[in-house]
Length: 519
Image 1 (cartoon, rainbow, N blue to C red):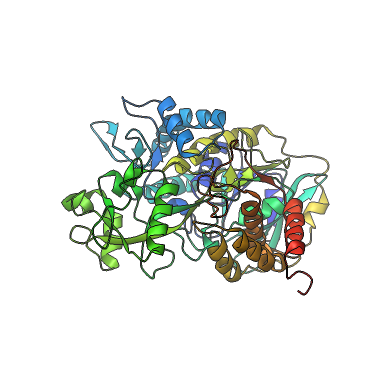
Image 2: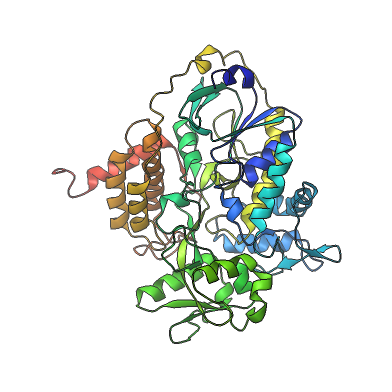
């Protein structure tokens, strides 16, 4: 790997090989680009696990304005309207662009088949293989990437540190499959590293999704936003398997209902019932479980006998777990599913650090607000990847300040992280319902684990920033629900946090706790 820094010098580096990373690299062509994938290309990504699809106003009775209205309503006051308008308006074109790259979406008579999901006023979910949309997207885009001569794919390589000189990106330090290190001098890095599900015990995300991009950006000095907003999917299959199997919202869109052990539809009172926004459904299930009930998704009537045809992957998942969706209700419970917060970016995906962009779940564009509307995430990644590529392509590729210091940057301690302690802490304190005492206890536990500048402390560092953000938001809004502050403030405002601010607030919190003097 020692030759790579010279070979790849000044090329844009894209970190991550889900939809956001693959699409960014493809849209940068024919400019030479390096794509880092910590696993075989497309594996271990949340995209590959995505069931539902992409939300786009493609139907004759739908418009971007309607899509925007649903997005804003679900986002509980924190959607940035102009950013969201740009994204939902571009979503239909992004779907067609994906199809041009070889994605085989479900269609009939020359038109996309469209599904319905919670809080959408129209059928606008484009899917593939029924419930295998993400897998099909990764298949097609990975093949397109391998066929593009300008893209160099480094598999089994993980980014561990960003080099910053004079306040701007100067390079990136990586670790290879045999723990060898290399530094690529570059003035342009795109983080497309996905989410944080691996930091929770109960999640539908790959275990490897541990907020790596957030840690890289924070240590480089980037501003992060809305970290407290963690979405819990209402209907993860309630078995011992971890990660948890997902039963897509699209199943409820086709008529399945939520019942308890008595057969009662206990969420019938919610506006929209089972198709209310995700945060409301998740909290309703969580409370019902806390009261000692069991919760089931009943698909026996709808989709009924057509379940396996419409949802072949979910049908297989259920049967492998010992359940027949056509003859018995499925036990479900909420599980961590998506992170609305991330690296604060502008309309071109630029972070607050010159030379650093972010795309996909790791970024906070303003689209999702406090509660993501179903299937908006893949659409966001596909749309924003093109804008990020355009911005990266027009940025200066070299600068006199990026010299041999970047090439010779010390690797320091680049050992892999152990997320287990953080996973237990976050699962207790940052679940569906939060409370001050739990958040303070989490901060007290996470602060010493996050100490230092080594990547081994990154999971705790990310967890600490989430806990600090959640403690600071003294209201309930969208996916952030405080039992001690159950009302929403009159004015909605996004949160912003740097690493320095997070550490200062954590120390201040620790000093104020009753046990601080004796600890």
